[in-house]
Structures are given as structure tokens and as C-alpha cells.
Length: 235
Ligand code: ATP
Image (cartoon, rainbow, N blue to C red; front, side):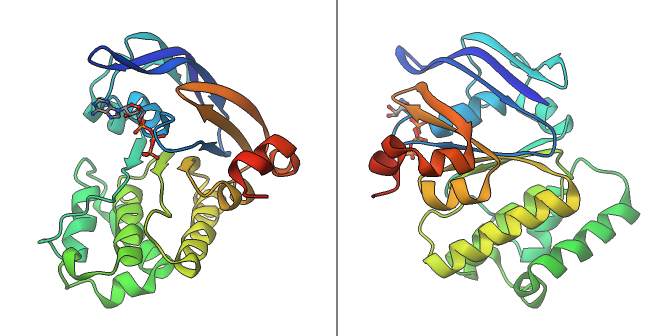
């Protein structure tokens, strides 16, 4: 579904990504784990067109997207939930969700998707008329994921959904990520520092170290890998 070929991305003169190559098949959950500053967010932003790569290729369903604008990329069905969530704090929950469907015209289907989201996250239904800024951190993360789902993405890019959340809320959100993948057939690219939970949720994973892919494999194998256990799983 998505292929990165030798991606090099920069901030000014600083090279953040070096020759990143990876593949995501339709229907998979893929995780990218790594330490602070390894380049995880930059990888997502290179895919979504926010930090376009200086060289290399990104192919989505065979089509080159690495020179496309972010709005075109969203239009193709790739949606990113940014780190730190960035919901609209002064808009209500319902209005935030409406914003997610901004590019869509299929109003009947939009209504069904909204019902699905309120089923997934009943707390959002309860709070639909409250400003987004009044929600707890976990609820804001649920809203950010839901807003992206309202765009009906085929590929969902999630940047650190666990950030700043209590373990119980994190587990709940990861359970729902899996559910979205299974029920909606949404392919998921999950960037996470919580390597343990990410690898337990994903089918396959990649490890990023200072802008380079250092390891990859099936998530179940990576959980048993001694180097990964030592560096990322605190064992
Ligand atoms: P974190 O988990 O802390 O978000 P990350 O793995 O997502 O880390 P990135 O945010 O992609 O890492 O950062 C990769 C590198 O690029 C780091 O060295 C970082 O300092 C640098 N970087 C990120 N954003 C900018 C920017 N706007 N300007 C300059 N350098 C940046």
C-alpha cells in the first residue's frame, strides 16, 4: 500500500532521516519505535507532505506522492493524527468531528461514520456539545483519532497516541486502534515510544535510531529480541 524508498529528510541543513526504506501492506498495523529525537515524527510528516523529503520516493498504491501537497495526500486517504493531538479547543466535540469530514460530500455515509465513532467512544457522544478544550488528555486523544477517522482514511498515521496518558487509558486507546484496523480495514502506521504496547498491537515493526532504520521484523519476534528488550522494553 505504501512504500518509502531511500527517503532523506531535512530541517534546513540538519538531516533528520537517512535513507529510510519501509513497506506497509494493506490491512496491516505497522509500528515505528525509537528513542526521543530518532526521527519518528519526521517519518510521518514526510509521508503526509508536511516535511517533504529532499530525496527518495514515497509510493502510495503505486502512485508517487512525495512531491504532493498535504491536502492532496489527505484527499488520497492518508490521514495523520499529530503528536500532542491538536484538536480545536474552542469548538465542541461535534464541531471537531465535522472538521474531519470537511473534504467529504457523502452526507449519508458521514452520519453513519459519526454513529460508529460515538459507539467506539461513548464518552465523546456524552460530551458532544462541550468544547474540546474541556476534555481530559485521554478524551482529547480519542477526539483526535475520531476526527481523523471522519475523513474516512485508508491509511491512518498515529504519532505517539500514548503520550501523557495514564496506562489504563493508553491500553483502552490501543484496544480501539486494533478494533478500527479490524472492523474498518484501516491500515495503521503507529509511531510510539511505548515499544512494549506498540509491538503487542502491531503485526510488524521497524526500529529507528538517529534517523536510520536499524531493525525490522514481525512484532512477535521483535518482542523476543534481546537487543530490543534491552534498549526499548526495559528488560
Ligand atoms: P520524539 O519522540 O521526541 O517526538 P522523534 O523520534 O519523533 O522524537 P523527530 O521529532 O522526528 O524525532 O526529530 C528528529 C530530529 O530532527 C531530531 O534531532 C530533532 O531535534 C530534529 N528536529 C525535529 N523537528 C525539527 C525542527 N522543526 N527544526 C529543526 N530540527 C528538528
